[in-house]
Length: 559
Image 1: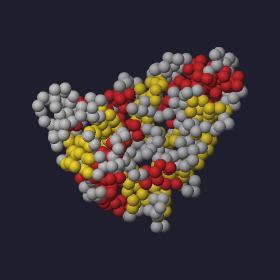
Image 2: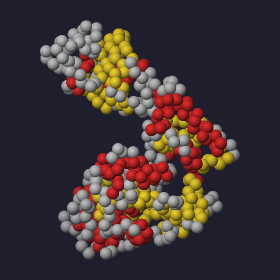
Image 3: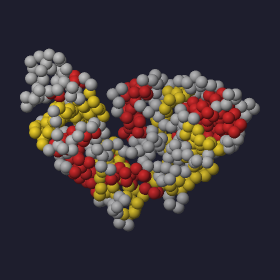
Image 4: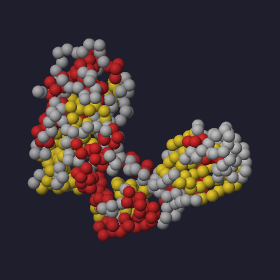
């Protein structure tokens, strides 16, 4: 069947509504209103299909936005106002024009986002080629963790399944538990390496075994991750190289990146790749590359090759070298905005966190510098540890985020609040008749129990208790500025957390003048889970802190 016939018969596996009827009703509304150009920012797949194909049917060139920032003089449809665009009756007599235009907004990861013109014919040609080249079939079910608002998702979640007459799961699945709960037999997963890494590390990763295929794009799929996925499941793992401007260019199924047969590729005088194909007339990229009999070796973006001391240095080569350390889950390098040196953002993996806990930032940085020294000398002078690399959904690093991450002073992200039952606080020890507890914070609500704190003060039954929790991740500023050889959370910082959290729930600590009782029992290290418990009674603040469930400090302060 043709693309249009497949669309007419299409239903999502998890949404039985008639997609093509919605397309026609959407088209009827635009036709009646004379809308010639339309901005689309829609997450819901059913609504997106209706708006996108409905506007193409009637010739209202849709602009698919990467972010919900609208031009005020253009009509815009989103998840909230979508129903306002559906006419009561479907349009009649409409046919797709193969040359119907639409526009895709780039993510802006390498600078300012742009609108890229595409045609329906280009997308269908590309998808028909992929259908023959990748050998997926109408028996496959496609599901995705990437948005249909980007080229990768639009090609592989929208157009390829429609060309094949295959099934599609409407929901965008971004959480491991949602994916691992599916019966994945004959399923093809469209994903970025960011989520694939999270899935591979899940205790339930063996549930991926039934997958038929994994298609990855957006950022490089590292060999270690590919190998790990290969051990977990039997899926064909296909990495796609391309862009919004070019469409698909090359693929890697485990050996090397090879140009698709329908793609003509060359290099300009800078050594940057240019491509043309049935779905891309011609585009000059900024990706440095070499080509050898269909094999494509990418050498990094031209704008990521910098000159230091009269020598050209590839930032992507430095990143690859840093990853060889085995300590990093991710890293990103860029020129320091204030100094003529390179700065590196580091995200530890499990081994890196262990080493950081053991020898601190100073020791880890010394090892990384030694690894770089032979090839890159002292090009990297500044190292910043981050909890998580600020990549976008496609796994790309947005330039604007680099300085934010480099100069950030991250603090813990706390969750929690007031506790209604005393038995829920800090492990919830319940007081037995006649038992004397070390702290009233651990005392339950037994009516027959007379409760005292360690100073002998009778406790008030109505005192409100609070409990907050946070992970002391390696990127916290305090681990960079104190004890560089052995990172610990200093006692004064533990007190600061108590007082800040108390102030945040309305306890006035402005007159605090004395910490009457304070005891530290256990170190708090990077990666530890810290729980802070406190309550105010009789003009005093009582508090306990727990590290990974074990009490690490207690105290009492006069307010």
